[in-house]
Image (cartoon, rainbow over all chains, first blue to last red; front, side, top):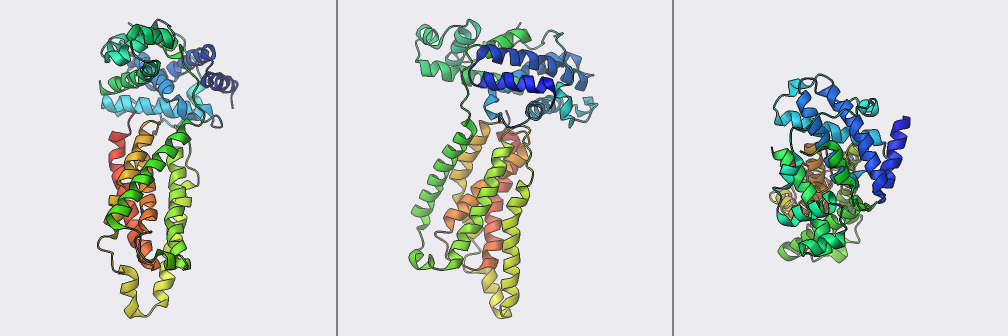
Length: 180
Length: 214
């Protein structure tokens, strides 16, 4: 197990326990690894890389309850990145764009790339297409950084409904990306 | 335009702790409701066999329960592993195949030891015409519940994951159906029960790639 894997795993485990600062650090570091990994896999679709980094980060977040702390983090991340990569290529109906075999799971943390291109897909535009019961909780809690209590007061729905709205809204966002 | 760093900040902000047993809890709920639905369906439409008290004294009755129960155990292990990205199946497929192969071996011994005139009865019993279809029909509540559970997780091999959840539903259904069914011959169970369990597994494999996407 590599040092960066150990480190990232610790960050994720603490993040899953509710430490948002550590979770932020995890996602940040992960995004650089994903970018390098996906850039290497998509040499003919360089414009798609940042969109796919974002889609994969959203998938990691939405599916974070499926990580087993006893499992190698490399295997978990690689399987998610690979799944989203294959999904993208299927959508583009161009599996020939793939130049490398995909079963190289050790490489997922091998390189890191913090130079982000601009994404082409704007997640804010997609967010605005969500129904209010999901859009407003996400805007208040996730973008403006308000508490559940405040978000509930501002939207006039219950605190439980705010939490459900955020959760379902982020899943719906992933579904919209998939359906593009 | 949302930059990746802004997305990260958005995702991390207010992210609450994740329940460590979330996946297990999901399957407990799905199996509980699914088994409840399938049992209710069996009890209302078919009813428990009237001679169950006498049948329970026969070792064959318990073997008939143990066979689908072992397939349930193996398929549950496979289904749980296939719900987590990057989790290997390891020897789980062998654990699923083992009880089926043991049944076939046992069936071959029974058939070879029987008089030729008795062999058709041992294989076809009285209910071969509808047994597999009843197992498949009874599996619907379990099948729906398990697909719901898996849909909220993250399978990456969708056809295989659908097949595994389908097999789990089919084996669970066979286990519950065996409280009604009066067939007690190993050759019958080894073929018609296996066929019954395979129907939801095949349906799961067919619909997995579209239903289980995330």
